Each structure stands twice: as C-alpha cells, then as structure tokens.
Image (cartoon, rainbow, N blue to C red; front, side):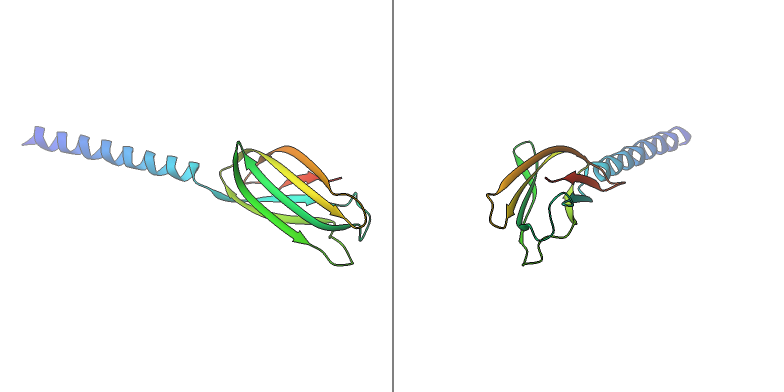
Length: 122
C-alpha cells in the first residue's frame, strides 16, 4: 500500500504543477488594460477639429476611437485605453484640422503594462 500511495502523490503533484503552469501561462497571454497617450501639443490651440485613432497588430485592429472637438479644439494630451496583450503595435492617427486638409500619422510602438505609451502627433 505504501507504493500505491507514493504513486498517487507523485501524480497529484504533477497534475497540480501542470495546472498551475497552464493557469500562469493563460494569465500572462491574456489581454490587459494598456494606456496609450497622444501628444497633440505641437498643434496650435483650436487647430485640431477631429481625430480618428486606430491601433493595429498585424492586420487586426485592437482599438479604434473617433472624436470631434468644438471651437476650443483638442486638448494637449489624450489618453486611450487599449485592451490587448503587451507587445508591438501600429498606431495610426488621422487628424482633421479647421480649414486645412486632414493629415495621417503612423507610428510603430511597444504597448506596455507598466508605463503609458506616448505617440507624438504632428
């Protein structure tokens, strides 16, 4: 009976270790709330009338936000929340100006859980 008990404990320990490893792996790969900041301070006050932001990884869109601003224009910094796994992504921002043609800016960034990723928009 001692041998059967030892085999049962070995199997139980193996299954517990395997289950814990799978749980940790799933948690590490899962999406998180990541912060992305757009720095619009290079534009003049009241100059930006609208903004369309798309965050992509490969061909898949992770997030999209479209907004328009009144006569006072856009604030100097805008913060977005992206629910995704940390890693490389492409941020594309289309800025609509008052009385000027729209302008598209694209940047490759690394989304991180620790610090917000800052993208400068011209």
